[in-house]
Amino acid sequence: MTLKYKRYKFGKVKPAIEEKMIELRKQGFRLRFIAKKFGVSEGTVSYHTNKHYNLMVKEYAKRKVETKEGRLKEREYMKNYIKERYNTDSDFRKRQLEMVTNGFKEKREERKKKGLCASCGVKLKNKRFFACEKCRNKLRDKARKRKDK
Image (tube, rainbow, N blue to C red; front, side):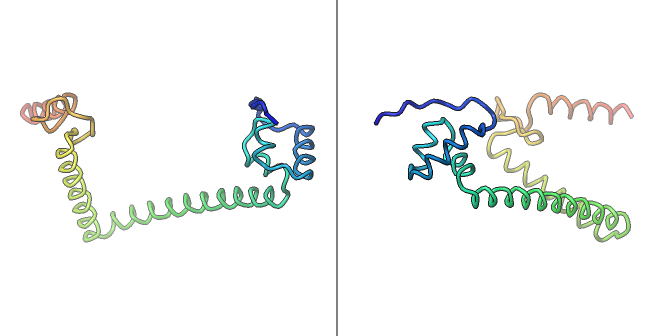
């Protein structure tokens, strides 16, 4: 039996098509066959024909939203904690500054080896420079402003 593949062009599966899917599944047809017949994915057919799968997908989506919100709250808490500690603890401030400066140095060295601009990461046309033309111009402008002061 040859089957023409047609793509389902609508956003949601209509109830009439869902009923046909369920009927074909009860008759013992495979998910792949039903999916090709209606032009949808196998996951869509499984979602509409299997109640247990449907509930499982909804539970997963709910958990994903809950964990995302939890992560956002945790991130916000950590930002506030670091900001508060940075302003009150001088040793913590020194360690943070060392971490940042060493991290930037390592990143610049890696970029230089790869032939990328040290500050923005754009691929360099001329490898004898460490920065692209835009970044070099910014550095020149900064140097000129320092001299003028």
